[in-house]
View 1 (spheres, rainbow, N blue to C red):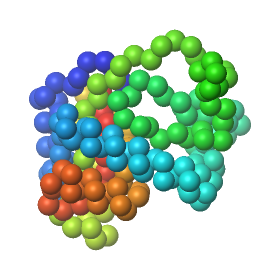
View 2: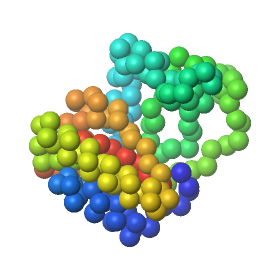
View 3: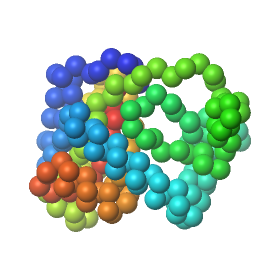
Length: 184
């Protein structure tokens, strides 16, 4: 992500693309971002203790060039984000406590990111609402991609029921958060 924020008109265009499908989109302000950061950290910590989640991440992390699918192992440590990102490499080497060095990692300092943080939600939480949210996400993501914007989901907060409920309450939204994205 670039260090410059997205233009408001572009964010509005992305939101409008999702809202056509019956979902709502909330663009997070600074206070919301702080709450999201806290909830992401809590969800991430809970998932690090969940052996089933860790095994699933291990299965989806690709090491080397022998596999065509999965998350490349070099994507596991992404400094510079204002929020906790999923660590796809909890089973891979991490920063040495004494030196801070990550074996094999690039040593350039990270640049600050200023992504827009978006929550896509629906009025309910039925299977039909999940499909509606998926279609809305697809349309939002396509609108973003067409304008050169990249996005990534911040799914931990939605995957843990307690943090998902707290996110909806913190944002004071009617309905249920279904997807959290950062875009830039």
